[in-house]
Length: 113
Image 1 (tube, helix red, strand yellow):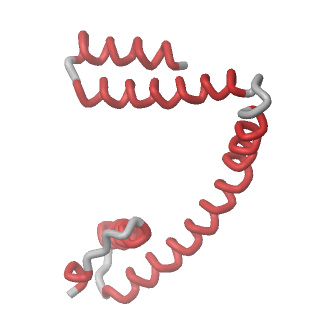
Image 2: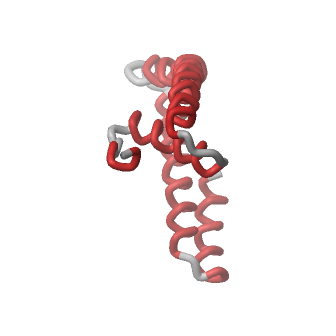
Image 3: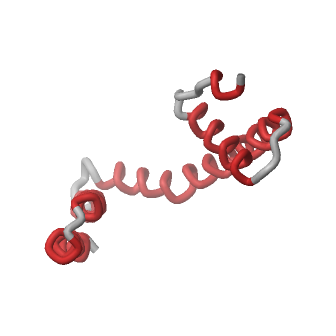
């Protein structure tokens, strides 16, 4: 997959002329190369158990955590939507964005004033 990402980056630069798409493809290539490196770390006694533990966490703990976060984010976003007394899909999306900004520590209370 990392080879395909690098080829996609070359295609984006040469054919489409889009540096933003090229950056995205190279970021994906970098991520997949690190995952590929972790496959080779499995063979070593010192790093193998850590790689197995990390992949078990990514496959079980992180999805469960994301489900809990989405439930709480949905609850708070719907509460913000109801408290805003504004109607429309734009306000609902804005409420979800505000909740996401709050989780990421970038909440701006002036938008609700």
